[in-house]
Length: 203
Image (cartoon, rainbow, N blue to C red):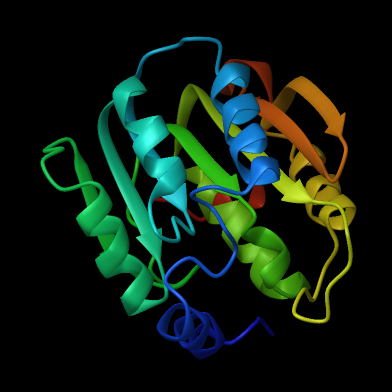
């Protein structure tokens, strides 16, 4: 169960920036807080889930040696590629999660306004696979709107509860702002925890 990728494509074909990522004050403030939460750290390899038209991607890129941005809507991917043109460190790919998650290891994974479009089973698979591909000491930042929408199989609190419950992660930052919540987590060293079921299946 998930929100159909075709519905996102339809929105982007109808309007170039359907959620106002480029100029909506809420979106810009949320992006600024997301970048600030990373604390100026430099990342080697980073992955952004649901990059949309690339507005947040452009803000993340300067902090990353290599950044892969993934989205399911072809029109959004084309827009993101246009936005990121000239940034050789950024690769924009079309793909759905969790099926098309690229292999890590990742030093940073960004999940902004994306995981609540998945039902419980796909959320579980996405988080498990993402965490398994996160480098030790790598960061996962989750940022989601706390309102309700018919297109969201899950709410922000349910999504973040699953992420926070993962035994391979430890929480670094937990914030609530008007309209959204932000959680920053770090992959624990292997010596500091038991292996997760997903890791037990890895070769």
